[in-house]
Length: 318
Image 1 (cartoon, rainbow, N blue to C red):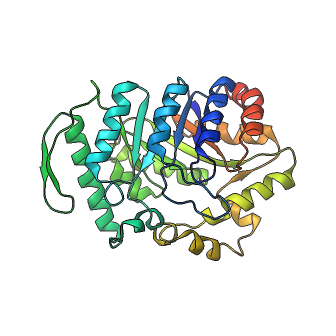
Image 2: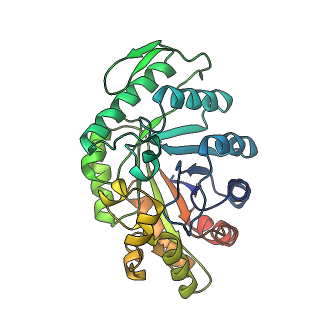
Image 3: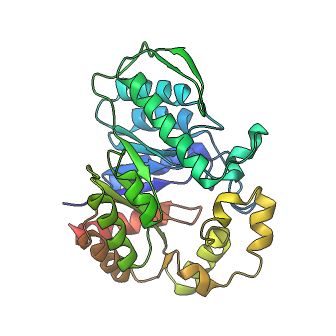
């Protein structure tokens, strides 16, 4: 059966409030959680960006949920440090943690002052980081030169079993590439035919493990309110690659999204005041073959969403 979880958006909600939300989500019947890992939000209106790795320790302790994080090693983070973070959480909470690895966005990575590489170089860098992280989690001493440099690194605190390293992708090309190295796949909601092609591309390339979907949605008691929430909070997030990869700052995202309409936001956010409509959409996503579906209400007040989906939507899906 498909597992239904909640997505915790650090770029939108203060970490203490986000912690309270995942505790409430577990009580309401959500079975898992995942979170973002940003240095800055996508819009000044979102207004937050807590440090995911500090928060994850608190969230794992406060709940019995499994947690994942979407991370971009290689520029802002050295892969040996990410391996240490993964190893520590997985040793404290065995079987409950995973990391999805991607090539990143310049809006987070520019803070290092280093140049932003081309996409092909970012993918090569990511693959090198994956090899470093896997080697360290396996107990090896890792030394490496080239696109990533590591000198005699060894993890002294490791879990008995390394947690899954999942590939993050939004295109079929990247999904197929992930099939060569990842322990699973995570993507975001899109037209059903595209999602079907994403799963096929990953599986046909040899990809194993769970396929996961993060669903951006907006629910409120009225359609107008659901639209207002989505337009206010997520209109900066409608841009396809390479724009979303290469835009530099919050100010840039806010400028390019000034004239975005609600209809444009609807292409990337499932907006409805009808809980039955949300239920049916989620049922169709599950029918495509997703093992885990993480619900991301794009509003900043999660309590009404958690209550409504916990009492009406999740029971209907089960």
